[in-house]
Length: 133
Image (cartoon, rainbow, N blue to C red; front, top):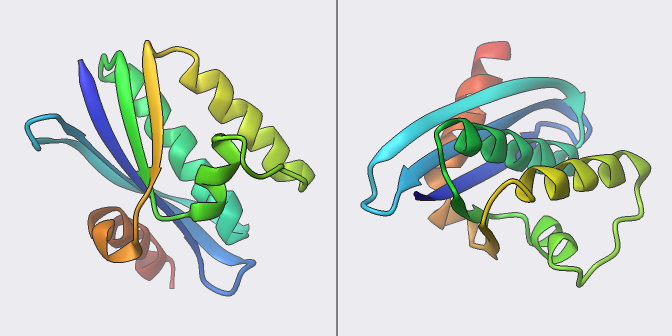
């Protein structure tokens, strides 16, 4: 089964209160999961990686064998595609965790999108952060 994972991470303050947003859909567009998680005080990039990692784990739990990951973080996408190096030690650990989680699937792709095309995942981030405020 192929799924499309939309993820977003946000930190108000950077670093500041941070959260993930994940929306997983099947290829017919049906939402299989939509949620966010509070991360405490973190950076935006930490939140972006954490959202993707969470989405990959949830997709595996749902039985997915192929995933298309859509993120509005150009940095994270370019790092995952090997176009940029991951220099920050904390992000290096998350990069490895994402790489390992992705290895559980037959096929994985990463695609950057503009923020206005990722509204559902962004809304999940804001729901979590608004509850914490």
